[in-house]
Length: 126
Image (cartoon, rainbow, N blue to C red; front, side, top):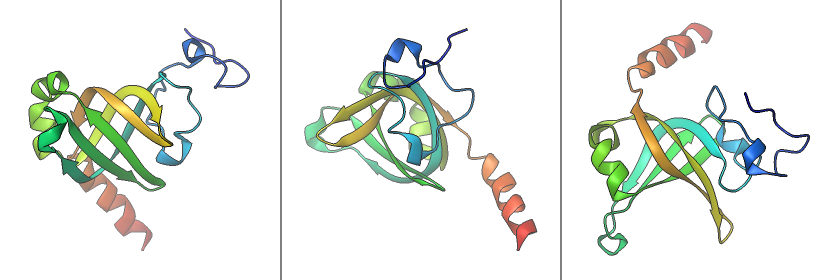
């Protein structure tokens, strides 16, 4: 088991994969290259013709948005989830470039079935 150091940005080798998803508002915590899991509603899918097969997915959770980059090889492996998923869990590596934070997808899971649970939980509080 990996143990996190006193400050998470000191070394990505000390950043363990979180057991649960990292909220969008905490994406500044892990260091560059750290493996993270995020989840959210799919609010945008982009496949620009100039991107050579790369797909950009934007997820939204209750704290903000997460930019996800899906390379062609990963897209082919998780095609169904990328195309039809409304709620996704993405595990991948942190990348920061030009003041933009991305998660480079390694695994994509369609967790859209959980939407019913989320709706039920919200309806009970109103």
